[in-house]
Length: 251
Image 1 (cartoon, rainbow, N blue to C red):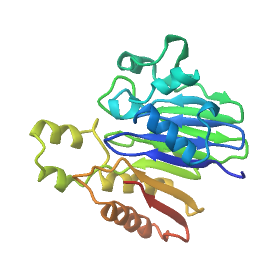
Image 2 (cartoon, rainbow, N blue to C red):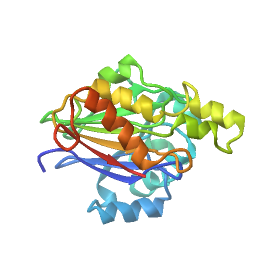
Image 3 (cartoon, rainbow, N blue to C red):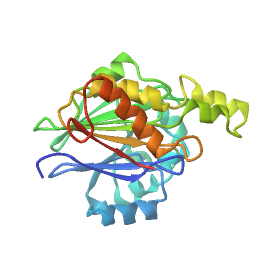
């Protein structure tokens, strides 16, 4: 394996789970579906559950931690922001670890860094995962906006896994209660298609990067719309799909 491989095992409000592996090491970002489903989906992509070196949690909402008992079964260390442990209750104490944003974690042949995101959680994070060859995966899920520090942390990635959650006009026209609409559209809610496109316009350099658009709302977005918004934004930068970069929508 010459690069980091990314398998998105689950994405969306029903659950999120991402596997990132080098030649020697496999880690998960989030475990938001049932443990038995994680087991099966890992095996489906050729990963033995016993080989998982660590799980990194973005935040403690149910669609990101539902399957964390897999850590107890296989004795996998679980990393999360220090305050986020207030909302994570299903991990054995001896497996709980704190991932600090100011310290890079070296895990076999992987280097994992964390950056603060903006979501209505105690201590939410995104993660970058890098190997010794310089390949880099950035994972940015639930966040209401992308700031300059996040851009700096994610820059120069070979793979971007980023949420493209909703189209604001669809949220406004939806049957959601006003309180939910306000939450989704807030600075600590979720990224809209245009926000994601704006972030990627700052990140993509036309070096063949792989983009995965994830965490799409089933009722307030369309895969084709999410992709089109990013493709148009990148075309304005002079970057063409399948020539300068690749993009896949995970819905």
